[in-house]
Image (cartoon, rainbow, N blue to C red; front, side, top):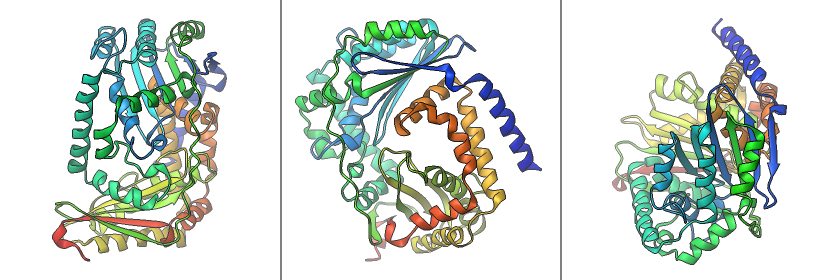
Length: 440
């Protein structure tokens, strides 16, 4: 009965959101300099949101300049020709707005939320820092120290980050996904201004960005402002494509990282395909089956029932290139890392051998669809989803077929992808333990 109620909620949500947002409602245009704008008018509230997706992340870096993508997430707030340090935030807040940004292996994204009447102010702020960013020596050195400290703090305070800094480059032997997004400390300390300037010129070029504008606004107004503020910024020669292909892994890899932890931490990763691959939706749903919620396979078995772990989760990042499927667990008291690893492998083997039930799969489908349509019910969720599908899946229009793609996944698909990717030869295992407990 509970599953039926959830399914009915999905249908009602689908119906409501479909009535609000359709493919024909989204408009696009591209400036002469190559910058693409995607616009969705939404007049429910007098607000708007502006996302800019720059197709640059740590995968675009090379040894010697790792961490530059993340550094520019900081640099973009340090001052431009018409707005000094801190003024970007002050002007935005004075106009009732707020902002945030994030960097991944693939992208750097800036987002603003504001009253629709402040749209021109947002265009002014964004275009100024894109077209006229200042490379002030003193500010660069100050922010270099901030990022260096952030890196140390992240590795000290996050066991996941600490272990991932060893596991990821062990699993990824060739592809630039192996760099940490925040960069290597020696690189952060040794960039020179010309490194920053060349990187910015290449990757913050208008022909390397996609802007998504959603809210109480009109297409013609957005187009006029885009042409006025971003149009004069010149296009640049596109960067050389990333052509490195991670070689097939042909044997299990194991690595140990030392840190003072109360109980062992374990990370298990398997190589998996990117977002455009036909197995994406099955893998995404398998991730949810494994660890989304207390009733998920790993949580209910290893935390609630067997009490092997105090924390466990899985993670399948959306990515441009083939990447990794993560499983991460923290051992309970008096539980060894080998016991937890065996328990995880047993759960994976059950799915590989017996599959999952139709009811279990339908529960995840319902949850995925509810989450998807909840996101599409807000202007921020619409902008984020439109941008993600445009950037990762190659076309924002594919978001409208995503619900059918989730519904089309079968129990056989789940079993197949588990058997395809969760193999020993495709696996890298890392453990985080105190030095005195090193089993070697």
